Length: 205
Picture 1 (tube, one colour):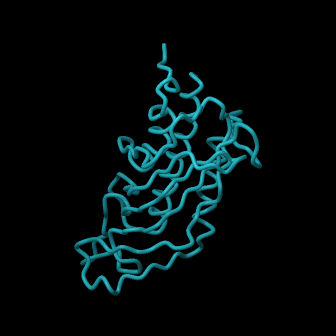
Picture 2: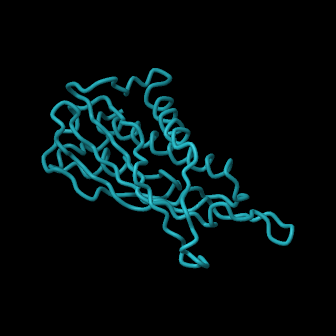
């Protein structure tokens, strides 16, 4: 028999731990920074996921960066990154009969907003991807700092917050734009899967 997470007063298992675990690497877990006490998570059955927020992303050079003042962030086609996020959410929560996506606020709907605050790429943006004729490979693309807010979509009451850093990618690859976008997609798909699993867990599925 599955444990009744909702009987614990503050639902720190099920929904809240799974919601942002495994977003970048399978074993990474981001526990909530804050959770409202006494929430009955069983009343929720759908998500209203807002567009990915990229309004004020900062670039944070890694500790080994030479001339860090020369590191500049140029987010080319931010709409593409937002679309990758939206596609991952739609596929996992709205596809194959999942029926977990809401189009508007209403009873039983959780509003989810993700904002990327900063990125730390392993190589300086725009730098050469070859050294002495050899392609440069890195373990993933870098790190990013993000926040996730979860609200009651109807009342707009804040229910939980996550904040922390994630590693983007977990394989050695050439440091190319295509590979970096692919790592972001894997991260977003992992996040969407955790949202799906969280509601299943809360409802004992």
